[in-house]
Length: 281
Ligand code: NAD
Image (cartoon, rainbow, N blue to C red; front, top):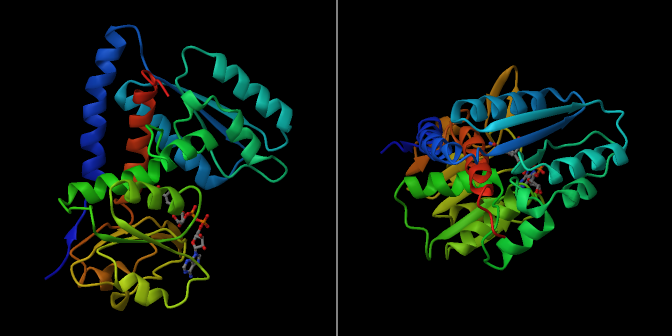
């Protein structure tokens, strides 16, 4: 039986419309959520993401500010901007679009963000809080992955989850999040041996490696839920890390690329920004 196609675009639109109501209520109390997006340099993919984030803010009624800076900016100037945004009461969330150009220290910039405004969930305090099970800003892409799995109606507790990729942005926080949901979690990466065999054990397979169509049909247990985080540009087209046409024949449910995890990432950023208005951690 062919897999259920998980429509991230539709689910993200539902989430945005729920948020719109919340934002209207907050605005009526004079507490409109505000997001500052900092973009350094002219990375084309980053420019697309920033534009999408701005559009989503506008649709939902979130106040947004865009700070575009040249790649020649100094570390000190960038830190000074973060300090100003930290102190600005209109701004509840600060997002620095990564990667930063060479020569700038990403970790230092992230650590400078007030953890109460860390809507990307990359600050070591947010990472630590998530790791020990405290309330925390959860990185947007893994949060979107979890939401998509939940919406398939799949029970997560006790299930075997395999995460392919161990980046700080996707793989590691995804693993922490599913552990929090009481799954049995395995993380695979470029040095993992017998990776196909590991993947075949998964009830839920999360793929975030940045290798076009790496995951084939025989890597997937029949009926598994497959979430493809990958965004790869190949011959002018966007393809995922999973060979969708093949894998949909065996999976129980699968996300397409585009239209799966991508729109969810932005919806979760909006959710984190709205939540930041009342944050007490
Ligand atoms: P990354 O390059 O930081 O990390 C890739 C990880 O994959 C590494 O841990 C590496 O060990 C592992 N890896 C590489 N080759 C492998 C292989 N052959 N087998 C097993 N593991 C391998 O990437 P990232 O930032 O985590 O992003 C991963 C993918 O997800 C990229 O395509 C990126 O564009 C995409 N992405 C999508 C969204 C979204 O909103 N949908 C958000 C972030 C990243």
